[in-house]
Amino acid sequence: HPDGMQIRITRQEIGRIVGCSREMVGRVLKSMEDQDLISVKGKTIVVFGTR
Image (tube, rainbow, N blue to C red; front, top):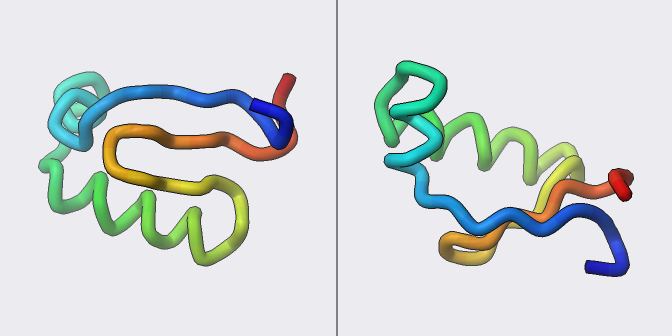
């Protein structure tokens, strides 16, 4: 992805990895998106500023 690193993962999978609920993952992803750190479209997350 030209803007950063693209990851395909569900909120449930992230929650299992870090040990929290998928609802909490959703809130954190939304907060990061509001800060323009990431872009979320379904299961695809783009992390900006990484190569």
